[in-house]
Image: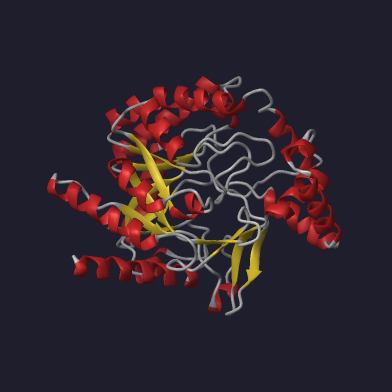
Length: 391
């Protein structure tokens, strides 16, 4: 497999020289400084690629070209925004950057209620507490109609959770939930978050699916012509939040996406942490079923709460509830099939990581430390080598 590392560009406290020392050979990055509805200039793409290659690495995957809310809602300006997105695709393909990860999560991207939950062994982890999220939704966001989405016991637990938080903890919860896309500097305030959610009123699950179909019908032919593979990232967590539809949460969703626009360019980012946050997702079976259309792999694990399984914390990369061994075995088998046909190695990265050792000394983005991801990548590389030897 191609071992990659997510890098947030020249302002990332982790340098390309350090990434090379981790054992990664590929870089996963994007032009985060450019607005979502703006095409990436060819010169800027070339400049980023040159910087990566000068460090002895390869720009393997774009994560991501963000989608505007107009694309997801089908609102005014959608076609212009899709055209801008497609132009960026063409320019990436021309530069030889041929895998693009993207997502279709409305308003809230990956969502965590805690960015630094203490670990018993030391260090901290990302975590999602369902009841804390409900407390945010019901009493801090005060989303219209939110009470209908929770039963009486959940509303009572959320109220008790809120009562246990002082003013600083309440503000931390707001900041964590509304933080926005990783790599972006701007999230939402509460009024903006509420307004963004309201834009989806009446769209529903079926409507959001049709908006994704419309998008893929427009961009998949462009990707094919440019030699670019599109890899949609699953919802995180893989269920509805804040009354918003989520359409990339399970095997049925993945089948619908791949069937809706059956293009060799349209495929999946197989994120074991996102899919694995739902107990009924059989990760190894999904990896086996969708292997030919998996263009990128995020490998990590979460430990679901035994009392409230909708809550979870990031676990060690070979720990938690995800069958990482089974998934890795399926991905290696698929890579072997591609190799016979002359295909390239499958890019994967150790996704997220505990903040360990000296990670607190750097102002890295939540979930993207140096030592925690280095540990995860080393574990995954060891697992891969062990499975190869066993074969």
